[in-house]
Image (cartoon, rainbow, N blue to C red; front, side, top):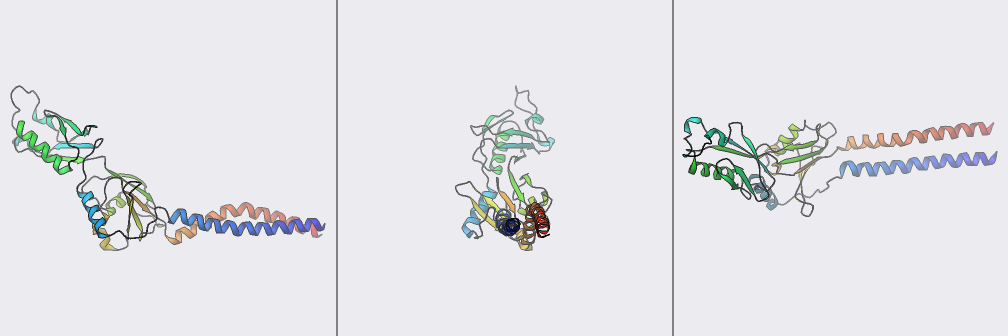
Length: 269
């Protein structure tokens, strides 16, 4: 009988030790998982922000990019193509726009022009080059619109619709993409939203406080291709998550201690 009591007491002590260790473990691990992902709290110097602004406004076309080229010229400004070419001006580029892949050699194949080198050019430079080429051969005062439609950013964390989002216009701001992602959840920490930029070797982290109205217009929130936006949980949400995680683990242990108490009570009779 004495051995049974000792075993039961040992089991109860073991249970409480496990509960304490589990609580500490979940408190530590859950916080790190939810709060320290992409951690870098140091602000970047102004020189880096100048570099960021340049990257946003002057993205250089690369092989494998996808361009959308649209003829926005009014038809009354078009002239006939040179004699012997059966292609109509309307086929040069449609009003709706057509997509063109930039080949590995940095060129796009355009009707009437053949392969045109565009790699290394900005969107505006590529547009001007295409206009000049068509003006010199087929059109009068040609007007084209060129977009790079494969550029995108990734949104993770406490937003309603995480995922990949296209940079559909120049100078897309953080607030624009957060809006497309459905906005922040009620668990979000809006004061330390992170923009991670660059490659694995030279990644940079920009910390943005979206609780400040002036931040919406700050140039450091301009986005560029392959940015990762991470919205962490706020402290209250992290604490709630810790409690929920602990509860999941504690439930079977509570069942165990209840069983032990029953055995202990029966053993005393």
